[in-house]
Length: 395
Ligand SMILES: Nc1ncnc2c1ncn2[C@@H]1O[C@H](COP(=O)(O)OP(=O)(O)OP(=O)(O)O)[C@@H](O)[C@H]1O
Image (cartoon, rainbow, N blue to C red; front, side, top):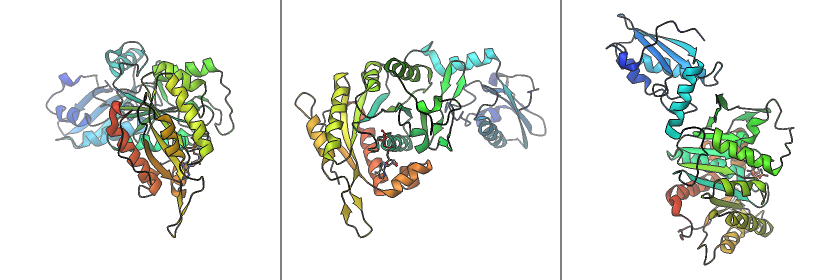
């Protein structure tokens, strides 16, 4: 990091040699905020001499900002593409506290001081993913759906509120060898890391130096509530099309807090084909309903494993997904559809373990393809999905 020495100059003050560089810099996006650095006040000055040597002075929010290298490289590349530029020097400095405050105000727009995001007036669709039992693949599906929706061009956020099994950072490649990527803090604003196009925040990112593999966090209800509230208040997600929440299995405190904080949330229920899992899944959906949330569909996971010879082994039996959908459908709430049935698939698990969900790493895998199909239905469904009968044919 160098101390910038060219004088600060705004875009309006730019001369004819500098203007094309400013235009190219519009393409450089802050990797965490996903907005152009020109718009965020991160370009301090641009200077181009008569020989076409450009000096671009950029400002990072904090020293050691994890995105520094990427911003610097993208800036260099963009400036080099400007007409008339023969050489590029990028000077990297750090914002003063006043510049940082201005940056925070710009990022938050006119939303003022930390209101709860995604309240009832928000245009963001909030979908919580719940299951009765643990280990049914809820986190894997949530991550796969988030990445698929982002790949469809939607702006997607993911909150991993699974306090006991925060596996989202691992599945999305944000955690390895016991180290989890930390969110960047700018003032009191927390910027979620972006993985495969999804803005991700997880309880697992707030353990400090502790290794999540060996750290047990015991949470009391009020603390859980405050943590979820903080996620929705202090973590800056920007304008999202969809926010997915991975909830802990069961009917606990988090589900109730989410119901209070996000009463407009829609609920997706994950179950396995097994009848015992289906019973518990129904109960967790009923708790969500009691808090005013709408159940928009059921996803069955770990359905029949297709053998190399084409035969199918139903490791966990059959019919659990349809059973849950049927039990949750009634005259008052309408038909709750079974949105899909995701087969057991070793490549699906292997991709998740390696940090790139199968929807990206192995899109031809039948489980991955089914997740993409479910995501497409969610994307099409919009807010009025509940109660509509969808033309879905489970495998
Ligand atoms: N369709 C599938 N085929 C093969 N393996 C799967 C499938 N779905 C999930 N898995 C694997 O099953 C294990 C449990 O999945 P996951 O962690 O997503 O479950 P979960 O319901 O979120 O669990 P918990 O709520 O207890 O954290 C993981 O190892 C995951 O890779």
